[in-house]
Image (tube, rainbow, N blue to C red; front, side, top):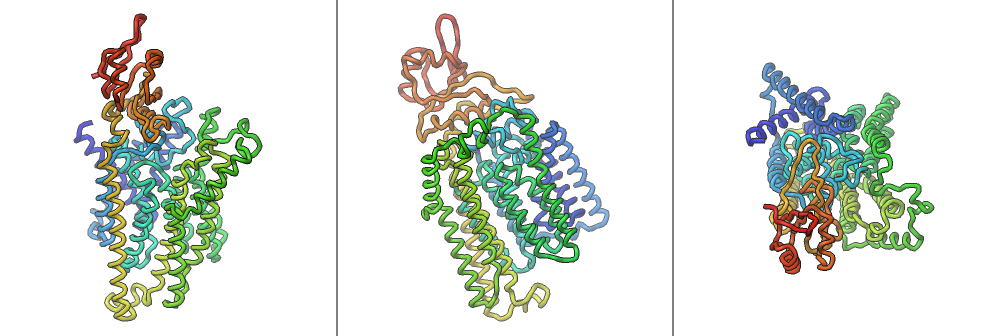
Length: 621
């Protein structure tokens, strides 16, 4: 595609998204903060349904076209009614937009590095873009076929029309993340109290500390799950007096959570529990009607998840997937693990959970302590009864239940070798710590809002403080929390910059320099057999990192890796492959390549020529 076509398609995509947001604001009357995440989640679910039905591309094109039509319809309506003059941007919205642009320009310039991008998240999106269909049971490129395709559907929609580069993929996922953060500010009712925005901004920025293991410069979804759940909390809180509206706006958000990842049902369930609590708490005349709305909302949100399970049962019969426990593999209820192995897993798990030097443990202790001190301070000095302590108890119960669930995952479902080293523990723990901390920050924001002596509108702005001293503390609070938020965001930004600048030192870059990033169309796959050669530093070959990168870059399922050649087995080894890809060369490789095949053995792709007389290889220019 030419640059002009790319620009036109990107403009059409922006118009389409804007059209849906205008429609949502006009018809549903949602808060401005909730509109982007509602629209993005709804589009992801619709594209997901189209993928399940087998018309991913036509369905996505229809979604794009409908959004463009809505955009021009509402634009003309505003012009006709001369209502475009009502459009205004608050200082917070302007600041959020500018801050987001800094991160988006960095995402566009970033490239994929994390292992799991190549083992699943990125290769799935790449296959969807190449085939315009969901992976099926015969998709040799995809190892973990039972992972739902919720976020992947949204990434497909954006990349299909804006471009398929790694930067576009990262920016598309970034759109979901920043839409979630923007939605969290919907918890604030008094829009003129800038201290509330500064406090919540600092709290949201704090969440990035627990996301360092994951960062947003990759397509992993462990950060999406908790912040999506926080959005559910905010939506339900803001519409607790009109619970039917809450039920409507959470459907696409909760529905998408459950198809982002298999564990998404846990996070959605936490949101549903809060919805039920709010319903039971507000026993008005419409109690039973609201109960029916809650039931229908939860049922509707479960539809994407149920359809995925049906899709897996029908189209993936006999396909073994990660974390899936089969009856014929079980020895009792322990997933084939002996009592001694279970004890080892449990001991390591307990040690990891209570390791106070770990980031999750420090986060839990720190946030717990801060919440307790804040509650005591509000009661003793402000004479206010905050609800923060109630949220603290509830979220600690959620935290305990979640950790027990992780332990059950390691004992009953995960393969033994991964269980014995608690594979992925820090990421799983970081997810719940983000939810735990974010939930307390949101509650503290509401408590702070309710602690002002005057409510907005009760007094003129210049008299909206009890005393001059309270106004001075208010202004100093804004400065402090804004400084904290900016400092934390700059730390995150600089961390992302460091990752981007060090890309040329990474294995994905080295592979890319040799193979390039191949894209096919019409479902074509490179069926050639490739053998990749590189050193095994950081176990990059033995843990299959090199091979997954090779599969992604070449779009070829038949990729093996090796970190050393053995002279007596060299000819036999190479005779099983069509190409040799040397990513990192060394003296031994160069010596053997020169001795047996007369080639330099430098980094590059070598075609292996099979003949009756002898094996030969040549460098592919």
